[in-house]
Amino acid sequence: MRFPFVIRAEGNPFMRSWSKYVRTYGIPFAFAFLLVALEAVCDLLQPTLLSRMIDEGIAPSDRSAVLRFGGLMLLVTAVGAIAASGRNIVSSRVSQTFGAELRSDLYRHIQSLSFRNLDRFDRATLVTRLTNDVTQVQNFVNGMMRLFAKAPILCIGSLVMAIRLNPHLSVVLIVVVPVVGVLIALNLRIGFPLFQKVQRATDKLNGIMREYLAGVRVVKAFNRFRDETDKFGRVNEEYRRNAANAMKRMAVFNPAVLLTVNFGIVAVIWLGALRVDAGRMQVGHIVAFVNYMTQILFSLMVISMVFNMLVRAIASWSRIGEVLSLRDETAWKEDAVLPETGGRIDFEGVTFSYSGDSGAPALKDVSFACLPGQTVAIIGSTGAGKSTLVNLVPRFHDVTSGRVSIDGVDVRDLDPKRIRDRVAIVPQRPMLFTGTIRDNIRWGREEATEEEVIAAARMAAAHDFISALPEGYSTKLGQGGVNLSGGQKQRLSIARALIRKPSILILDDCTSAVDAATEALIKQSLREYAEGLTCLLIAQRISSVMDADRIVVLDNGEVAGFGTHEELLRGCRVYQEIYRSQIGKEMHAHGARA
Image 1 (cartoon, helix red, strand yellow):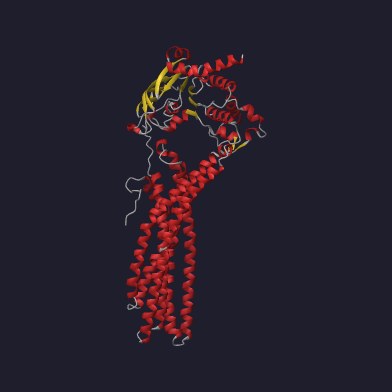
Image 2: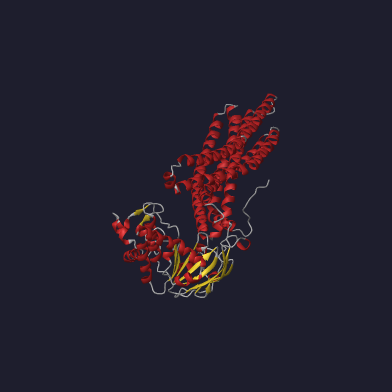
């Protein structure tokens, strides 16, 4: 039987990490296996002891034999109970620790992936893989130590003991065991694709919930509860249908196994009764054989149940492996050194495509330089490639062709961590974290003092509104800063970047939600902030870039103009159109009011 495994052993990071888990948990796993084996041996001894007690004690009315074998059975039961308790403790501890470590490793691996790798997955499916899929694998590891290790020992041991006890009745097992094996094989073959569908439906369910919670204010504002409820209902129904279909198909196998083994028990009793009536078998042998058949039934049912868990674990394991098998494509030279001072940025014939060499380029042959201490603004229409361009500096993506360099060193030769230690970014959509305002500002530099936090807030024109809050810098923020306005969130994001004291500052349209007066204060603070600070400023408003040292005009991913505001007004058609569309309208509106 073949399964569509995504995971391959050769050169696969997940298989290498799996060997790490084997080394870490191999000894306690082996100890749990020994305890399971001891428990299984105790279970296997019981029917034989019962048979001898019946044949040697009860049948001839020998009370001493009954007491002797009964006491021995109690002793064996006690040893088995102690082994079972120890096995439960070890298996629970190992499986829980393993699950936590696997989850942590997967989380760290996701953090290490490049944006290109992360873009292959929806955010909801990553959450599902971190939680539900890891839990499925963890449950299988737990079940394997507690049940799966015992079931084969019990099944094989019962077969051996039953054959030794009475070879003539063992013909029943020749029929029962292969039938049950076929049922388990069908269970695996049918169940794997079904549970893959269940996991994909779980992804969709999580995605809908995540989207709703992220946009709950928009839903309320437009009164779209019914639409969102209907959308969730459709996805929820798909999940229910897939889960019910999987469970319905899988539910057939356990009764089928139970029915097969029970037919075997009936056959054993019937054949045994004929042999007892003929004087060729003792009653105790029938009782023992039925007990062994019951143990075989139990072990086969357990094996069937564990294979159900295996099917789910395989589906989840392959999904985890899809993430862990991805390698960070970001490479660098170990001996490349980035100078401690400076901050010159050069774009030399930069072309970039999100789909690689074969895809349509988002940037085409972009060339310009940003000198230390300069503020270079980037302006252009929506989709012109402004954010894509600045994301090449901290190596969120690497160029398809051309070169981006910092202080003369190609960024592809540099460790991204070293670059990002020198670069601070204020993203287009401000992202704040649960915690206090102070914690969010210190997110840029954990060891910053209270005075530095306040100074950064002042430069970002945030100190006044923070001080007006009842708890000031100790004010708790909800997820994403939901209790702040858009402009306040932007100013906190700027303060978080400034406290880092970078040599390169990237501002990605981060003042779009603040008024012109506040924007002017922020710009003045930036000019006074640090001598030699290189600033890349993306803006939609031409009033935000007019006083920059240089302005780059992007149009469909190409440089349509580069120079000062005055130079571009004279010689760049695209910049002239932007100027007329914004400043011209403002002047017309001002004249109308006058």
